[in-house]
Length: 210
Image (cartoon, rainbow, N blue to C red; front, side, top):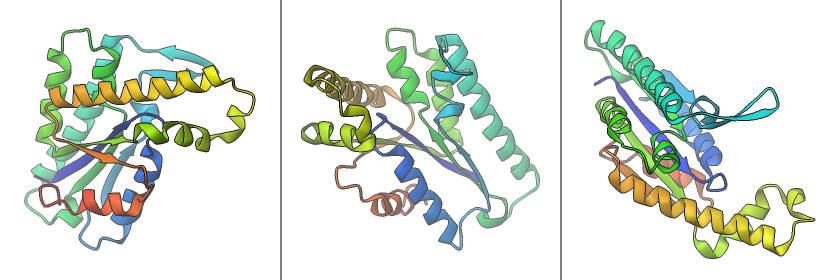
């Protein structure tokens, strides 16, 4: 197989962007790493999008089509490399990172039948995907939320803060539940300590992935 990749899932304050930066840095200094890299941030795969200043939410079918399109793109790139014949990972291998993907879908449409998303997950398996679910401990939820954009919380009420914290905790729990149903192998990483370089090494040097 000429392809492998990571899917970063988690709530907005869990550290997906910070870990993505650390993974890119690790990949850049790894002499044996793939030269071809595809990185798609959440704007290419999430359900709720800011379209010309207005928030637009995709339907279940629309989101499934979007995810399928992204996976098919990766499969086609891998098929091209395979058709060129055997070669080293560095020259013809493909490394990809996706953000907010299949687990995001499962949580948003948890009451729906999951045959389609399971099919997409099976194809993700075939192209060497591993899911990383980023979480934080309940007792630092408020600190993490308020540290991201401190100015946004200056005039917020105690009730507003409590609601935001509750939403984060509930979303994390739903992501955990859905990860247990997913066909994509998932590793949960607690990011309380914000050791992004350490987390990147753990992921990239995993014997089942490297």
